[in-house]
Length: 315
Image (cartoon, rainbow, N blue to C red):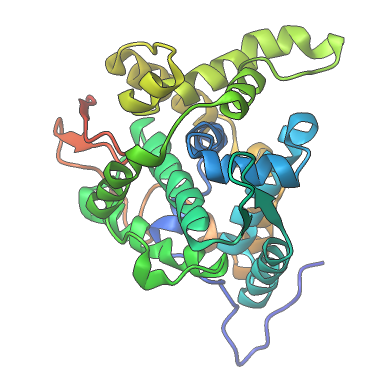
């Protein structure tokens, strides 16, 4: 049974709240595709990827890593403030205790090195915003910037100084341009790529992997910026084709009733609605309006994936 709020105190909406872009965007089902894109993106930074591979069973439990990330994002978005802060504190404690070794130099460094945390943060929020927006969840440029600014709170939760984190889409693109010299695809990144394309599953699930997962991985990879495709050395469909596929997938997933979608782990959205009331249901519409948060009809929207390219969507 959901805890009843004190009659003299408003229910705790958490760190973001119902009127934020984060509240609406993080409930979109395309976040699962975005999470896979983030894994592809993060693997481009050898120092970060080495820290992951030396401190986790990614090769055997990549699914678990994806689920744990989804739970953390959902908890910090929709859980009460105290719960969100406690979840973040647990993550920071784990990171403080872990380190990695550069096999070429022997250097030992911490997993919570600010540069590594910043790369993971930027790869994640750019993937969330880029994938969901490009798949048909339309945001004005101003609202896209607001989302990036809101995510400075998420950066604080993992131990970053919010003032040192990009606050707009333009700053995010500039960060990626400045990082390109540090990026490379080595053997460990190849392992990630191979796993994401052909994850090990029981024999009974191989047909589903061929039909469903291949589409997810292809969409996630295809939505990366062209310079990331060049690093991986594998071509992607033309951007217009990727956009059409993202939009058709978004329409399909959004047609699934929320009463079904929100039953999947981690179920924090259901908890927020139970705590705050039906008005807390995340929606692509601002509260109190019947108007979608659209860009001007037919205008181009800038990618936030670090490539500076633009695409057109009907509308």
